View 1 (cartoon, one colour):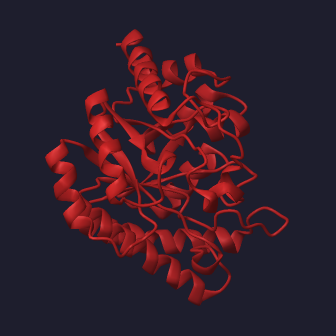
View 2: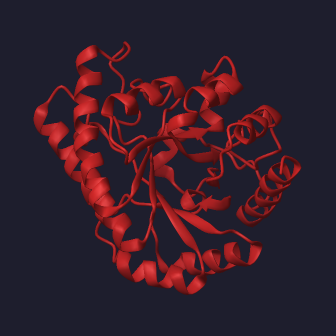
View 3: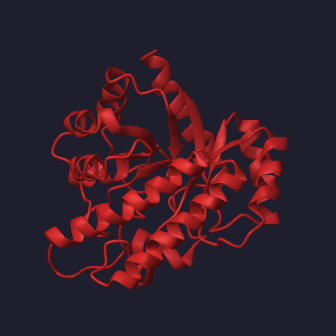
Length: 281
């Protein structure tokens, strides 16, 4: 079991201002951090060495948009999506990230007015199979994330994600489970987790209002009980959002501050995760 913190609470990319934050997270007791990989031109190898020096392991997160949508009807757009996902995987290899999570299967915040077509599903699967081949070559696990209906339309439930990765059919393509999206879309939390248990590789711990885990209305007992039941023993990573990323406001809908400070959220969230896991040890 490992505990991590997603850096999107503070920043959209690694920079010098994050060094004190990284040092603080290590002192709090985090095993690692989840790195946003949107800017693919950073010196990720150098950051990998710095994170090694701090004793922080890492996972990574990325997204795709309309212009590089891997499930687009436009073959050129799909090809660009595959290329960008491969480049992100190269960044993961350089920085030492073992898992790449996020909704990089389709365009974040883009809608057609109806659900996914059979062709969009097929195009998405074909694109992800190419990405998974590259993931295998760089030894990074893909953890595909379903999003609620207000953020995407290709994958909205964890059953969708599980079916998608089974169609991809590659050992380096799996799913991640997210408590925030499950709280919106799933009829049954235990059923959602069990549905993807055989392909699960990562978990996001995220409150219903995206603030401090444990301080809201997510059905935490059901989540931790079922994850324990299926024998999940991977990363638990807090995903929370604040006001640091205006460019993500359209997707995350965060307009107001819902916690005392980023440090408070990280500290209380870690204590909450460790407490819930310990109860079921």
